[in-house]
Length: 344
Ligand SMILES: Cc1ncc(COP(=O)(O)O)c(C=O)c1O
Image 1: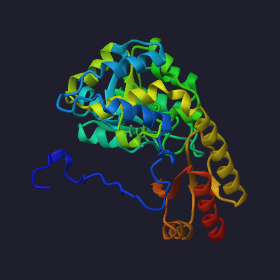
Image 2: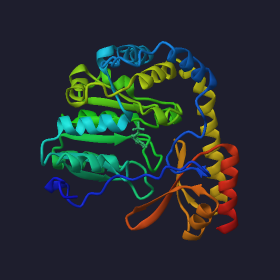
Image 3: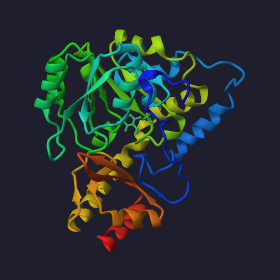
């Protein structure tokens, strides 16, 4: 790329396959469409949209719904085009060139990518050998590196582990750095640490509608924190980032969160079922608090899955190949398990 900044040389455009046919278990999405009630409400509201006008750049009505859901104020909420955009805004607003950012390892790859794009240096706090969270490694990485920001992903992508609430409190109170707690998968564990933003000035929690809420296509995420931290995002985001269709749909989803209760139960039961089935086959698979499982599958199994149009995610960690597999519908999970069983 002729015009690419010097510091970005070697980076390549982000790519993710757009798959429409087959069994899609590679992106941690929900296998279920939005609840019908939500689609119906959206269709009703669509008739009232002024498409010729710019949307409310403050997303005020949506922020009010989010604030109401958590018992906080509008000024404690920022809205983004997915939590991806919020992360990008935070790295942009917070990191000077050469600043350190401590991230869990392994964790969501975009943290380190955004660090690089904005000239920050990602510092890894390694997990234990069984992928459980290692608090000592995290506290040492913070103490030794004096980071500007720390990103905790709980429950963690790609391993599915959670960081204990007490550990989160210890991390947040150990430093003055801004702590980003990414709870993209928090709903699958039925727990949240959002209330801690009232206790700690340096904590921000990120949430998304792309996972449990079946809203990946509308691209919406939100951040919750003290006003001063929320202003970081609003200072660097583009003015009309969240379009009117997304604002409308996101508000309806947030106002109808109760419709998802049975889905939470579904994912809890189904991930345990798939986990037990894999364990019984002798597969190396890790306990999960989310809608995906972290495991080791042979090349032969992976090839057979692909041949059957069952798409999963392959990742390398410390030189070893792992697979991350989303929990699909019951029917999809049966098909996935059959291919693994027949080829293990
Ligand atoms: C941990 C984590 N955070 C953030 C995101 C970004 O989600 P979105 O931009 O769809 O809100 C993802 C997406 O997979 C993720 O796994």
